[in-house]
Length: 114
Image (cartoon, rainbow, N blue to C red; front, side, top):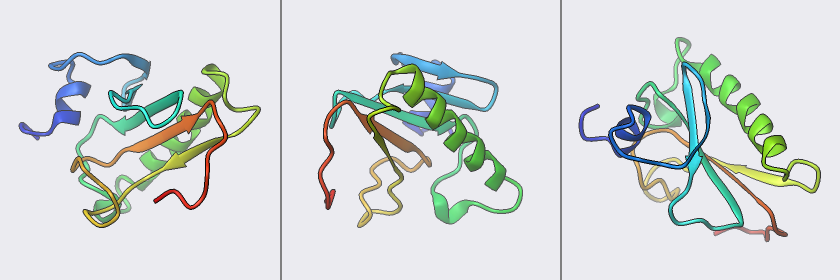
Protein backbone atom coordinates (compact mmCIF):
# COMPACT_ATOMS: atom_id res chain seq x y z
CA UNK A 1 0.00 0.00 0.00
CA UNK A 2 1.64 3.20 -1.22
CA UNK A 3 0.73 5.50 1.68
CA UNK A 4 1.34 3.03 4.55
CA UNK A 5 4.30 4.05 6.73
CA UNK A 6 4.97 0.43 7.78
CA UNK A 7 4.96 -0.73 4.14
CA UNK A 8 7.50 2.02 3.44
CA UNK A 9 9.64 0.83 6.37
CA UNK A 10 9.40 -2.78 5.11
CA UNK A 11 10.46 -1.58 1.64
CA UNK A 12 13.31 0.40 3.27
CA UNK A 13 12.01 3.65 1.83
CA UNK A 14 12.01 5.02 5.40
CA UNK A 15 14.99 4.28 7.65
CA UNK A 16 14.47 2.30 10.84
CA UNK A 17 16.52 0.45 13.44
CA UNK A 18 15.92 -3.10 12.24
CA UNK A 19 16.43 -5.87 14.80
CA UNK A 20 15.14 -8.79 12.70
CA UNK A 21 14.24 -9.44 9.08
CA UNK A 22 13.39 -12.39 6.86
CA UNK A 23 11.43 -12.80 3.63
CA UNK A 24 8.03 -12.21 5.29
CA UNK A 25 8.64 -10.25 8.50
CA UNK A 26 10.56 -7.20 9.63
CA UNK A 27 11.04 -5.99 13.21
CA UNK A 28 12.34 -2.58 14.22
CA UNK A 29 12.70 -0.39 17.28
CA UNK A 30 9.70 1.81 18.10
CA UNK A 31 10.57 5.51 17.69
CA UNK A 32 8.50 6.34 20.79
CA UNK A 33 9.34 3.47 23.16
CA UNK A 34 7.05 2.66 26.08
CA UNK A 35 9.66 0.38 27.69
CA UNK A 36 13.46 -0.02 27.58
CA UNK A 37 12.90 -2.65 24.87
CA UNK A 38 10.08 -1.80 22.47
CA UNK A 39 10.12 -3.44 19.07
CA UNK A 40 7.42 -3.49 16.39
CA UNK A 41 7.06 -6.73 14.45
CA UNK A 42 5.18 -6.52 11.16
CA UNK A 43 4.49 -8.65 8.12
CA UNK A 44 5.95 -7.23 4.92
CA UNK A 45 2.61 -8.01 3.30
CA UNK A 46 0.08 -5.27 3.97
CA UNK A 47 -2.70 -6.51 6.23
CA UNK A 48 -4.66 -3.69 7.84
CA UNK A 49 -5.58 -5.34 11.14
CA UNK A 50 -6.56 -8.58 12.87
CA UNK A 51 -10.01 -8.04 11.36
CA UNK A 52 -8.48 -8.61 7.91
CA UNK A 53 -6.92 -11.98 8.69
CA UNK A 54 -8.20 -14.96 6.76
CA UNK A 55 -7.22 -18.55 5.99
CA UNK A 56 -4.65 -17.36 3.44
CA UNK A 57 -2.61 -15.23 5.85
CA UNK A 58 -3.38 -16.46 9.38
CA UNK A 59 -0.29 -18.74 9.40
CA UNK A 60 1.80 -15.60 9.05
CA UNK A 61 0.63 -14.48 12.51
CA UNK A 62 1.86 -17.74 14.00
CA UNK A 63 5.24 -17.12 12.38
CA UNK A 64 5.24 -13.56 13.74
CA UNK A 65 4.63 -14.87 17.28
CA UNK A 66 7.55 -17.30 16.94
CA UNK A 67 9.71 -14.41 15.77
CA UNK A 68 8.55 -12.32 18.76
CA UNK A 69 9.89 -15.09 20.99
CA UNK A 70 13.21 -15.11 19.10
CA UNK A 71 13.48 -11.32 19.29
CA UNK A 72 12.80 -11.37 23.04
CA UNK A 73 15.51 -14.00 23.48
CA UNK A 74 17.98 -12.12 21.26
CA UNK A 75 17.35 -8.84 23.11
CA UNK A 76 17.74 -10.46 26.54
CA UNK A 77 14.20 -9.96 27.86
CA UNK A 78 12.79 -13.47 27.51
CA UNK A 79 14.03 -14.86 30.82
CA UNK A 80 12.55 -12.13 33.04
CA UNK A 81 9.42 -11.67 30.96
CA UNK A 82 7.97 -9.51 28.23
CA UNK A 83 4.67 -8.53 26.68
CA UNK A 84 3.34 -8.91 23.14
CA UNK A 85 0.57 -6.45 22.26
CA UNK A 86 -1.63 -6.09 19.19
CA UNK A 87 -4.00 -3.14 19.02
CA UNK A 88 -7.01 -3.40 16.72
CA UNK A 89 -9.04 -0.41 15.58
CA UNK A 90 -9.11 3.18 16.78
CA UNK A 91 -10.64 2.49 20.18
CA UNK A 92 -8.24 -0.42 20.61
CA UNK A 93 -5.32 1.98 20.21
CA UNK A 94 -4.25 1.07 16.67
CA UNK A 95 -2.61 4.17 15.18
CA UNK A 96 -1.15 2.65 11.99
CA UNK A 97 -3.39 0.70 9.63
CA UNK A 98 -0.96 -2.17 9.18
CA UNK A 99 -1.13 -5.15 11.54
CA UNK A 100 1.76 -5.02 14.00
CA UNK A 101 2.81 -6.51 17.28
CA UNK A 102 4.64 -4.66 20.03
CA UNK A 103 7.29 -6.60 21.95
CA UNK A 104 7.87 -4.78 25.24
CA UNK A 105 10.23 -5.57 28.09
CA UNK A 106 13.25 -4.57 30.09
CA UNK A 107 11.24 -3.41 33.13
CA UNK A 108 8.31 -4.52 35.27
CA UNK A 109 5.20 -3.94 33.16
CA UNK A 110 2.03 -2.85 34.94
CA UNK A 111 -1.55 -3.94 34.46
CA UNK A 112 -4.01 -2.82 33.23
CA UNK A 113 -2.11 -1.37 30.28
CA UNK A 114 -4.55 1.32 29.20
